[in-house]
Image (cartoon, rainbow, N blue to C red):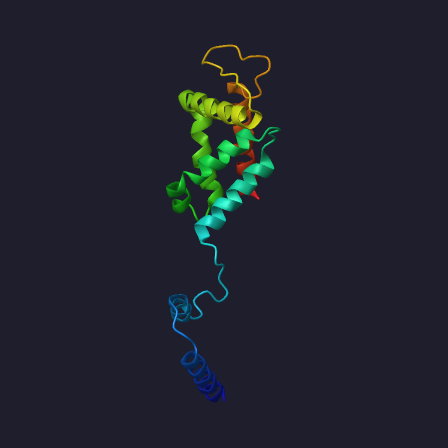
Length: 163
C-alpha cells in the first residue's frame, strides 16, 4: 500500500514541477531532498561554539562585558581546537582558556586586549597594567582579577565535566 502512495506522491511532484518555472534554488532544494529531515540546519560546530559562549557568559561575572567579549572572541578564533573536541566541548574550552592562567605573557596580552575592549565599550582611555606594576585603583581588569576570573571559569568547567 505504501508503494501505491509513494507512486501517487511522485506523480503529483512531477506534475507540480512541470508547471513550475526552473530556478536554481528550487533545483538545489529538490536535490537535497530529505537530507535535513530531523537534523538541525545549524552546523554542529556552530552549535558547539554557541553553547561554549553561552556557558562562559553564564559562568563569568563581568559588569562591563569586556572580559566576556574577549572570551567569546577566543572561542570563535580557536575553531581547530573545537573541531578536535566536538564530542567533548568543555575540554575544548578548557584547552582554549588554560594558557591564559598558565603563561604570564599570554595573561598579560589577554588583559591588554580586555582593557582595549573596555576602553571601546566605555569610550574612555583604559588603564594598562604593565608586568610587575601595581594596577591603577580604577582598573577593572588587572592581571590578578582576570587570572582569577579565568581560573574560576576553569573550575566551573571541571565541576561541569564531573557531573
